[in-house]
Length: 268
Image 1 (cartoon, rainbow, N blue to C red):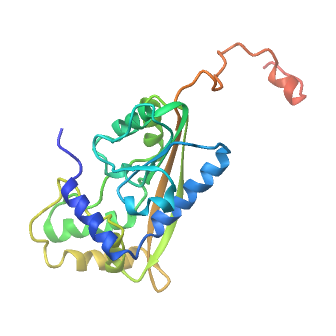
Image 2: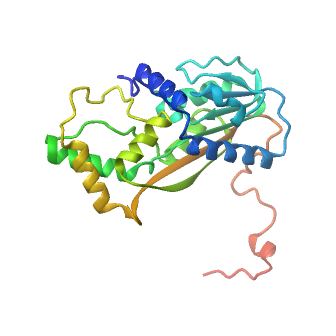
Image 3: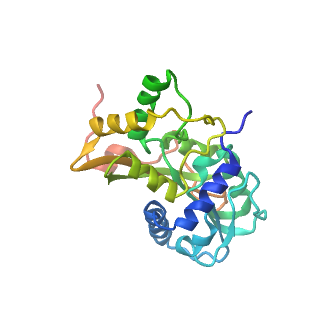
């Protein structure tokens, strides 16, 4: 199977973003959400690990963690950690379920995996404007925005990876930009520009982005600028353990629902 991501390009984009160091609002918001969710768990973790494409920002996300890059093969020891956070990188993985399986193997029984990544509604406006402009100007489409997963599909990956008590949910942010070009500047500054292996590598038609900007302005105006959607998906699962609650077998209940609700059951 052909790879989804050109890792050399992705590494280059991330290095450029670190040098620019001025557009981390998505990462900062995700880091704050990770911290809030860990506080809600109300458990002390002694051996955390962080999987990220931006190791220099690790202290913002998970202070004191073992930090490893989001390579195809994660540098995590089997059963070495009681917490693994996979941070803002899963949407670039060629094998996202493989990433989650490796995280599960790195967890001790009843250890926690918390993953966050960009979700399917991210940059919906940019996809639409670029797609229409490319059809008009170039007569066809080329991959320009990564195919980010929907929350339901990403949640199913937790079960495929063998994690217990899976939960998937999203947060959405609508951000206003002056125009499409300022949005692209922000994507470049956060290391999220096109790193698809199948991307078009020839010279971009001169009028493509100008036409896309006009389409964007017409369809997604917001006040004196345009809007852009960013969706972050959060995935939570636990390494299986005998101490975890188990679902009851169907038909094994000993109390009727009507009794619990204090109502009278009527048969139709």
